[in-house]
Length: 579
Image 1: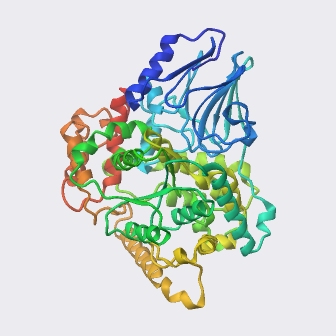
Image 2: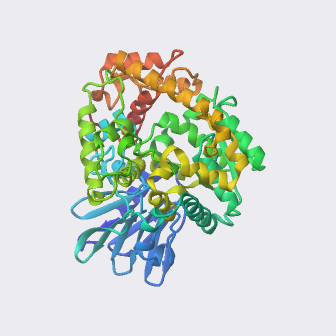
Image 3: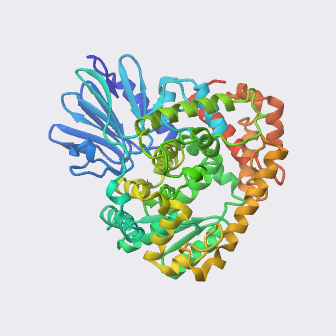
């Protein structure tokens, strides 16, 4: 808590915010810091760092010569929230380069309140729900940039410094993504070598010697590449996979782990444990900061709590998409050939997809879409002279604050998560690769094959191997293109028959734990319109029908129901109303 005027801070105000955080997150006793009459803080977990007249409080790993206290802002890297200053009352509030670790602020004329918990700020300051933030979450399931679910509570944007001193509050940016022209001139072979060096050596430097390190392993490309890179850097780790035993992700991850002789832990679905998982619902709502589906997050936190008994660190493959043209796949005919791109198509593909909105009192799609377009245009503006693929990668990383960043922040409940593909050297190498190397996963495939051809030859959950194309293995890619064709055909048919319908992705799967959670929430009035704080957002009869459908086989609306339940849970946790 930082004073914006000359008055001293009331200790009761500080303890009130700390108590709100503790009540929501179940945190133990905190470490208090009072470097001056105008600055008071409390950390839960890692104690403050003090060096002479300088001090720092942080969450997550801060990389940079001099550490969190003395490192120059331009050199900072990692996923962290950092507050530091001196005994004279000068303070810096810094987000990490991509703002993957959530950091929130709320201001009054006299005070700047800072926390890694949006809910703690809303609860302490009695802030109501923000109608636009709430509708954006309900419609898209994500909140990126400064927007949150609470009025007057804002998330700090990437690489931002908020300075408080004699001149008041100032804002600046200490880093921006940039292309490396030398890398764009490299051959494919040299590009593979450069990107691997960035990933392997940065991982070796930052994770080497780390005890109790977990690495997510799935049947896809990104986690496979990351685990191989860690192994190449002599980093010790154990792998972990979540899902049904017969799921492609699990079967392939097991095969990779056995081939590489990696320690592997499988977490099956929590069938029949709905009551036990229900205990994590409110913690999931709090740690997700009202920006993640709490029903889904409870299962993730359960797994992370179990892993946390053996180790505290976790790395995942989030952000590996930047090694391929995932963010700009809709620009196929002009990839890397112009500075122009179709932002509307990007938003419709990556944020505001088709969905049945009949449950809402008013369809929020137009409002949410317009706001997303406005904020993404502002984010892209400084990079308007760059090639379109680079601009779209910048926007995808910004949007990912609300996905990879939200999960990274939520994981702080039981672990210390990191996203190596969002470390600055790794991201810069990926974005600087020639555009034609990133199409069709060419770069990713060659990187995996360079680390271990045997692992590259194993199938992926999408069908086909993870190895590069060759004349002798073309037939092995047939399952991938067959699946791709089926999916395109199904999407086309669904959109023609019912343009506003959701993708019934989970309709074919049995999810007994979520059924139990839905019943648990309905029985406690969390999903009953007559007793909901957020009832004004919905049509009561339509919501009742949605909840009833969730308790029957074949339900495909789990994502939408999860968002509705989450918003109600955070409203109750913070005693907020809105709609």
